[in-house]
Length: 135
Image (cartoon, rainbow, N blue to C red):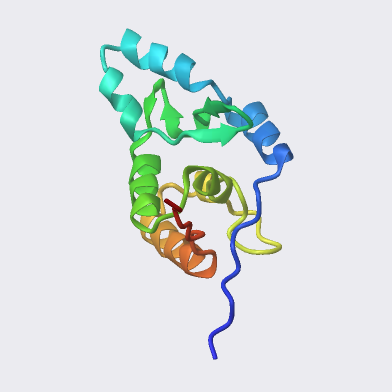
């Protein structure tokens, strides 16, 4: 008999506050303006966008020197293939990999193979919720 999956709980507000304090949390509109000023508005389609209340934000951990940080993009692409939502990916990347550990994916971006395996294991443990559309 297969056990019921454990879904990722709602991301706590304090996590968004931590991201805002540590890495910034600009609005999607601010990020779009930034990329337009660089002449690269199409980059917005590759960004991690989190939905907090009624607003959309783009966590600053995905930027390095004002441009999208390639290791974060690769992990995010992997997350999308695994059907990990934007909000859950943002929570995963800034959370310790295991209980009692202090290593967070955002601090280990030079260990891509380990992070991709960890993200896949995470996605297996916390599958995306299936939704059904009613006519």
